[in-house]
Length: 225
View 1 (cartoon, helix red, strand yellow):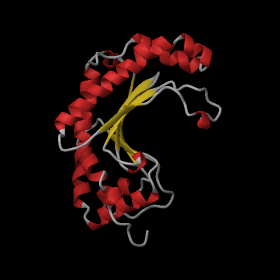
View 2: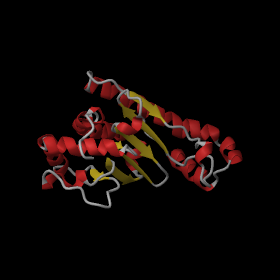
View 3: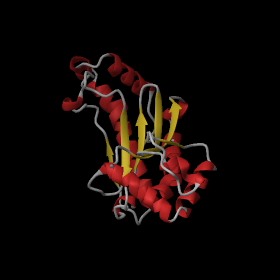
View 4: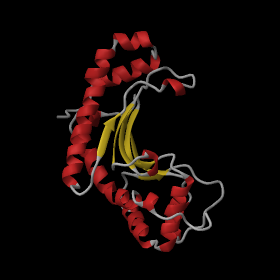
């Protein structure tokens, strides 16, 4: 059962950032496993179990990233990440095409939310087409978003404005892809079970967004896009 992270977790993340070398990592690998990777796995397992119980009709896949960077994509960076994340999504072939629940922990801050990253332009076009045909479902979700302060809509925008079906959905139309994100500086919550409770409650709030957006890739290609 997840009991929280520790000072040793934070120390290791700063250590690997400042000493991103194989010899340093090998000398501190047990710290990585005990204070960083294993607590993240415990948190992931508990969140997966809770989401399965809360939404029994949905199938979920969960995973925890590893610390090793892809050697093909180092781009001058060291071989290790100084942060880890866990994720939860439905069973799909391409994770970039549907929303993903996530939690991420780095040396300075943690974040969590729901995001659709690096999706195809056709997926964003399908979302706009769906909102054009019937804006009411997304308007209800947008009102839900506006009534809270935990999550903010983020994501890169098109250089040329996309005309929305209704002013309330302006921000959604302009996103190439998106995330509903909460970020917070590292603090006492990391060291307690309150963290997993907070993330679970946030994911529950975001599930209606997931339910709506996860079906968008299956829509027909829009005419004229």
